[in-house]
Length: 80
Image (cartoon, rainbow, N blue to C red; front, side, top):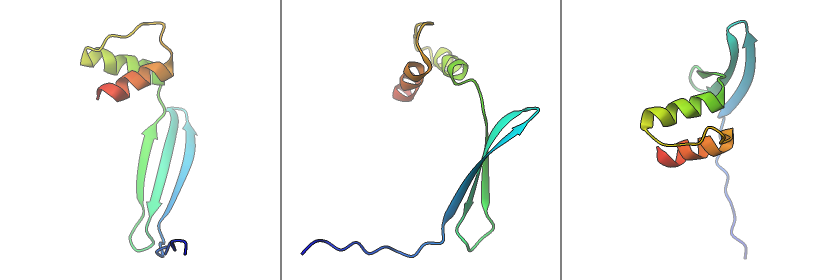
């Protein structure tokens, strides 16, 4: 007999919006469990390649200027 999966009832909801302003672009996340006031988390959009280079420089981790954004971020992720 196959295993049965019993799902728990959940009122948890999440939403995401991109907000464009003169100051830049922002990603806003709204989390709500249905019982309390919602939580909001907002992140500013940045130049990913520049930020990765800055982090690697601060950590003293070598990288080539020719590396693409994905390679740089893999290096950041693997060294934190």
